[in-house]
Amino acid sequence: MERRFQVDKDCERQYKKFMIEYESLGHMMPVENNEKSMDPKIYFLPHHAVMKGDSVSTKLRVVFDGTCKPSNGNSLNSILGIGKMLQPDLFTILVKFRLNEIAFSADIQQMYRQILIDQEDQNFQRIVWRESKDSHIREYKLCTVTYGTASAPYLATRCLFQTGLDLERDDPAVSSLIKESFYIDDLMAGAPSSEEAISLIKTLSNILEARGFHLRKWRSNSSEVLSRISSNWVGDSFQFGNPS
Image (cartoon, rainbow, N blue to C red; front, side, top):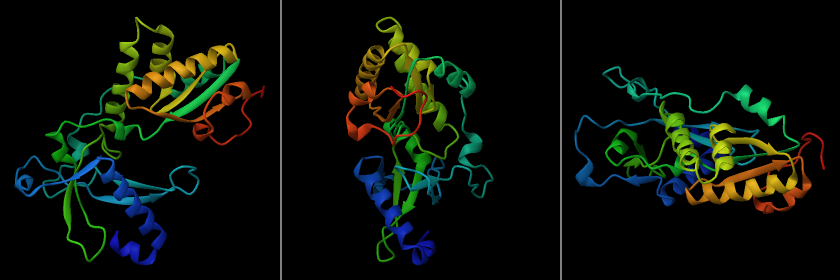
């Protein structure tokens, strides 16, 4: 990455900003000297930048590469379980989505990074990093579910799905919404009326917020629904069904 930074200063700026934020949020932590052992249960993840020019919120994504093979030939991803698919397939979600008079969608902000990994397992998510060539190379461990590891989609959706299971008795409508209307971190749902949509959105947002999942980029074919959501969390507008 340092060679790339020499010729791409914008990439360097965004990459360093990402890593500084990652540490400041507690999503990665420096490895202390007493943790730097030759324990075989340690794996170092290479990392690199992927530019997303069409993304509204994130132009650069830092990808941690769980497919990289060390000298023993086994990558981290090759020994991780991938789990089963808990959510409906995308076709089913879209068909159900189109049946609603009032449609709305959103996504969960930094979904993976809201879920902590067991401290012992964080050793499988170590990286090396320095902010500049004049700095010492340091070891860090990633503390949350990490994009680029094979188990990440299952771990994240399993935590979200558990929220739906927990609500089955107290709020069946929101429980069904969580279990049946999310595709990974993307919500696509609706309701028969604006009033019902507003009520669902408010309840769902409060429940997920309490569990560390913040919904953003809200869109709807109802201006009434959007007017009840903070403008900071409304996505860019586009033609979306029959506006009302």
